[in-house]
Image 1: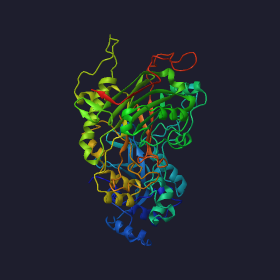
Image 2: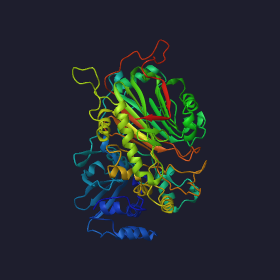
Image 3: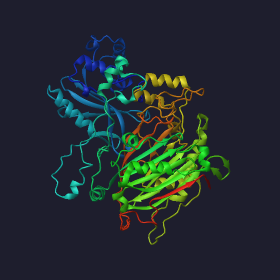
Image 4: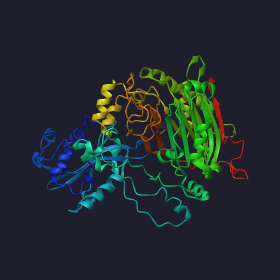
Length: 598
């Protein structure tokens, strides 16, 4: 039996309770539905433990499993992040104590959304958990176990606690930003931000109100970095931190602006582009500044680029900007890191209207490539074919854009005895896509990808209304075309996306949180996405949409990454005597075009 989210069940994070009694614990175990049945298939608390509950449905859930001879005590059930790198994911975790002459503790873990992954089970030394009647101590010990869950081969393990030694050098001081407390468990209860935005919180159903207070944000992977904290005020300290840790904070944004005027500098800083918290910021926009039709005549994005310069101020330098008709991509770097920047270049690929290889830029993608300390970074922003029926076309456009950008932008390290970077060995699409993933250290692929939900409007609205929490969203995402494309290996093979825990990003009525009320009644969908190449060089720390920015029919989406750039340093002297970037290295250049001949 494989494990999957229940259609409507919610499990409360037991650790969030003040001091749950047997009745409350068993009731919370009951609403876990399929998870409980899988994790506790051999034993469950007897019905008598919940006889004082008035919710008949909870009692029916408990009755689904035969009561065993032994008594099982539920210690924890919720969601915690397990593993690291490409294997990291959100897992439903259950910890139980089988009470008897020889009490034992077991931990069960099953992936939150991927039904193809097998569940895990491992025993835990009861001494690591027991609070000897002190619930606060037991809670602290379980939290510690959850923060240390990892994989070893095909098994799940609890990593040993790390005891830090006293600092002995300035180099250790530089690691303070990335050596913090381990990640906390994530409760199954819905985060408040995922509750229906059109419903007053005071009028929520009783079970939703009961679940909401225990919500917590998604845990960050190790090493943990507070992305809300500002970088040091001194440029030398910023550079020293990066050189010592080899890590940079990167924010990637995608937003279809619907050709509307951008928000104010203050609003952008408050909601989407916080000042002085990231080393690198890459902003991709679609239908930027002008409509697609008007951008055919004037593709320039000077006004938008000017607004972004205001947002970032003089502490950030523009690395590169590139416009393809109404699609735009721009990258900024903290000025302290300019000496580490090299190999800046950008290209655009048109996939829109046209014949053969000559296409207009109403659809297409832009790639911005540069190296930080010798580590190659490539950010692709695209606007793919629209409409639900455009699924196959979108998949084709992904391959066209990726292959062309690979051919134009990606070069391998020169062979031994040569100074000339190696070019792709083949020109076929599949080989070029593989070449990019092999030879780019940190690859991010996002934009208005336009993949839709394969549902009717009424079905989608019903699920959104009934499943406003994370579990409900995962059920809705089973009908998502991008998930289907990855599953069928039709596009984005080898790429990953962080778990989606936000409402669909399209299509909203102007300046409201209401989905499309026009005659077309478009089905709400996650059209705006950000994917990345998994690996040790990239950790994703956040993946969110911004509901507060309502100037477009799309909601902006951002992802925060911690990228390992601890490679060989790029040539020094990237700044002139006045402190600005030197010309001739590709830094600070912008391009605009309306089509591309392939």
